[in-house]
Image (cartoon, rainbow over all chains, first blue to last red; front, side, top):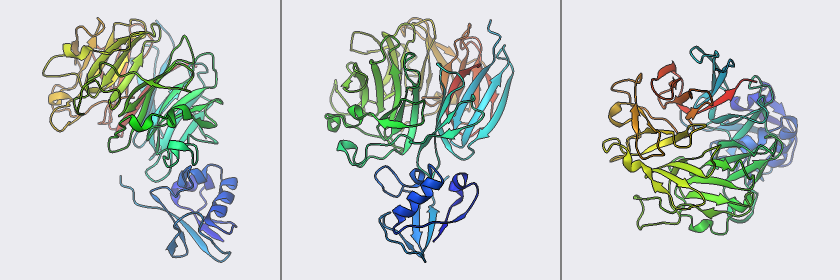
Length: 86
Length: 374
């Protein structure tokens, strides 16, 4: 599936803003991304597997409530850096 | 006189900068930024291996991390396992690291050990020079933590002033803003409070065991029984093994008072120290009193203080200096360096006798540290 990567994470993906990844949940997709781009996951998911306060993860048009959220091969994931002030 | 240059490692709200001097410390060159846009809480050189540096960083959106340099700050690599609480365990079960706030190199005998303090309260250790970090659960999950009266400023409870006794790597201190000062004699497995004698006029009751707000605590490197600290409620000294702090800030001028964030010790003379007072009256403006910045020096262990403001603006300068942003070098005479919330770096080559501005127009300065030449 397509995963859209926000600009604050481009230092991990070498500037790439869209990547293909596989998995049956958001967690599995993020695990794959972290294998390919080490360190990326912890910047958006904390040590208790919670999505960090200023991060949103959309699956298609809907925000995923947690990383346990199921995804399919045709879904599109968008990682969003929510507004967090100056 | 030393012929080597010095480098100041400057952490700001919007990235990391360096200032490199010539041997005389008269001319400085500003370089950077690195990690533009990141909040850089602390950048510290390893005194045991001067090419190694660690940097505590995060951005407004992303979680916290630590970067490591093995080439004196030219290039940086992210830690494989940044500081994080133990997952699903004890009191730390739902605390997550928001900032890595403070970095301290370990004892001289433990070459690759460092310690990190977080926001919220948390203590972490690495044994591989910053690549992988482990939570120190003796502190993070302390059985008495519920009684520590932990209260945080709006940004969260800060873990700072991690101090290692140069005579004994097992003897450590750590401080929380706000809960108090803690001591361990067994390498961090067990901790007890060290807050006797500290006032806490913002809390009910007297002689509280916990609930204090130490802003910055220092231990003299050559006389490690001599400790000083700048608190939310005054300036204090302690001579171990005694465990009762004495408020030495009472000797400060009454109109200035003894409130501030940083405290800096002379590298050789345990009776000489500096503070940078701020306005802690009414709603706590946290700026230089009357808009007139000045350091204050004591050369008698806090019995008396002298104002050192030559070179600073005479009026209308409304900044202060954060707890990690005032440091001394080890030269003779001692050089002093401070970074302001207004984005300036100031230095003195004569132990505070006069000050000059090395850099202006930087983002808010969060930390300054001295790196010796390789």
